[in-house]
Image 1 (cartoon, rainbow, N blue to C red):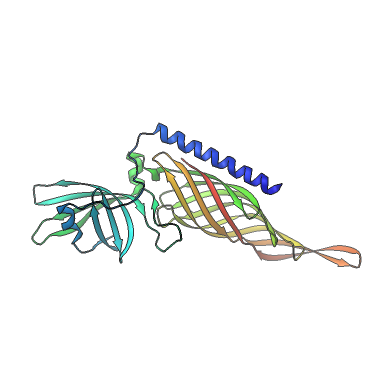
Image 2 (cartoon, rainbow, N blue to C red):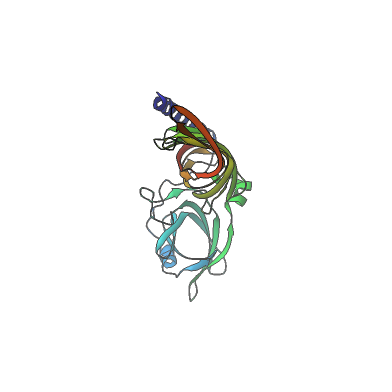
Amino acid sequence: MKRLLFFLVFAIILVIGAFAQANVSSTSQTTEIPAVPQLGQPTLLQQALNRLPAIPIAGNNLNFVFGGETWIARRNGRDFFAGTFSFEETDEDSVILTLRQTHIYPPRNIPGINWVRTPGPTIVLEYKMGPPPSLSFLSSSSSQEENNTTGSASARSNWISGELYFIGTGVRYERMLGSKLSLGANIYFSSSQIALNAGADANLRFYPWSNIFFLGVAGGYHIHYSWQALGYMFGAAISPEIGWKFFNVNTSGGLFFQVGIKVPIIFGEYQRYTWDGWVRRTVSEFGVDVGIVPFIGLGHAW
């Protein structure tokens, strides 16, 4: 019965998120992000650009490959990020290239995930025909700066989601404080054959790669009950967490999915039960305990 209830809650969240995504998509008038970063047939100019060596940008040596309306930047031979571009010829035998990021690639191989759609910085390059021909970096505007003028998809400031645990559920709200930091709150309940975990906490997350991979830490109140030890601990907890977030959004918001794991470290009163003949006694003492809480979440960003 509990499992049926949890699956019903998850289904309701899915329907609400899908409806909100459809509603936002029908009312917003924006430039559509390509579904797949696929290179087209390169022109003569693009063939010349593709032969140029890597250039340094933000501490990375990047090789740019152009084809059709798409470009892909590669670092150490691996796809790094991709997008669309436009160009403008100048009167000085040079071409100004404006590259708009639409996709990023995971830094490591993740099964089933080749790339993730997410807007990012706009990069401006200059190609000089020479001789010798050269490509140089001019400027880059962060996704947060673009949000102030274009309403980019990275402007999503609010993230709310329902979460499923091993046997349990929860809800989370997250508020972006910039392009890489967020502050939020989480309430959850999780049960397994080993232990029961429940808690309420506030969390801080750091996103090093465009709202995809995150590292976080949470602080709050936690209860941990061990079925095997017949005892439980309750008190203050510090919970490191790690996870990934994937989303399909337009410029106003949309549906997202996240998966992660948190490790609450609880400091508080530990109570366990002992038996004195037929009499059950409760022993209380201060202690430190550790829980492991994996979770998945589905929600909506706006």
